[in-house]
Amino acid sequence: MRRQILLAVFGAALGLCLSGCVFEPVDKLYALPVLPQEYRDLQNTIDTTISELGAEYATINYGSNTSTIQLLDMDNDGEQETAAVFLRVTSAEEQPMRVCLFRQGSDGTYRQAAMLSGEGTSINSVVYEDLTGDGSRELVVSWQLSAGVHILSAYNFTGSGANELMRTTYNEGYATVDLDQDGSRELIVFQHDTTGEGYNLAEYYDYQDGVMVMVSSAPLSDGLKNVVRSDSGLLADGVPGVYVTIEIENGFLTDVLTLERSGLKNVTRDEESGVSLATAWTNTEASTADINSDGVFEIPRPQQLTPPDPESTGNQYLIYWQQIDSRGKSATSGITYHSFTDGWYLTLPNGWDINNITVIRDDSLSGRGERAVVFYYWPDREAGEPRRFLTIYRLTGSNRVSRSKQPGRTVLYTDSNTIYCAFLDRSVWSSGLDESGLSQRFQPITAAWSSTSR
Image 1 (tube, rainbow, N blue to C red):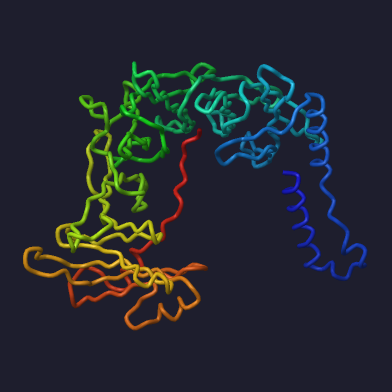
Image 2 (image 1 turned 135 degrees about the vertical axis):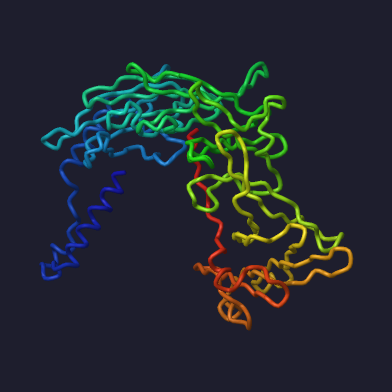
């Protein structure tokens, strides 16, 4: 963190030099920038605290807040008035973990305002959310006890101290949500039943009478191996929901949670089987996503294509994306072909029938930096032969530009190392595509970020 601050200051100093200080004496031009006094005082205060405690900086394992020193705007006034420092007291046998909160005073000096203690050997994750509805953010800390067991705590930071709002043990993950749409966040904690005697659970915590209370829970699907991710968003009928992606024995499924008057409910879990059968999938690396960017998440349901040759290797699939409403009913919102090998997907036009399409890979020129996926139109499987109407190429290597300009090829997407292009033969089939439409429907596959904290 100290290095980051120095780099920021150095960047500002460099900007000043470029704006006119080139006429300064040489000795001034090469002088190192001076760290602001307030940050030097903060580092000195932290160093003193570490020395007094006999501590060292602690590791934060997961999430977007993993720095050992974090400058924060806890009261949402636009100023970073709080510093959170994460430590481990090396000599402490009980509660060795520490979160020290330093508050900046009117004189610009940071002073220690609170010290939180926790069990374990590291801090698993930390998030900052408004849980109480007062406009300020609370601190949520996961203390790691062992590889599969954590304690989740939430604290209200007053500026002169901190009050613990909740403490619970969990073994899967947690998410912050606003299912009741009151403007503040709630916590959903995911529990894996390892005894076989009860349900896998999603526990719903809300702020009431000065503490976070578990007000309801809902069962997750049976057969849970682990919670892969969770995403908050709208359901198909506009109701807020949480999409919990779970790994099971033979693949994945998504449990969809929503808040009803009676409490948290899993709207996709089948009571008889104990599993969300309608949202289970295999044979794809795709996962729950807002694939069409309409604010509603979709769940992938791959459908295998018939290969053009019975001896073909490597099954090919189209993905039918399902939206779920608050009653657990599903409807297809779009169909894609995903090439995870080459890092792209194509949203298909309406009217494409899985019974009329087949796909194969062509890697015969991969040694020359060209890989291809070939789409065939095959309406008569009894007598007719499949006819090639679309090829999408992934070009790498030093000759990729010249190869993308071969006759009939249209460039779809370019990055620093790769060119994606296509050849479309519209004389074979009126597929609903043209070269312009291809570019709009083609997308590179990007990393999906999970909102689940461990």
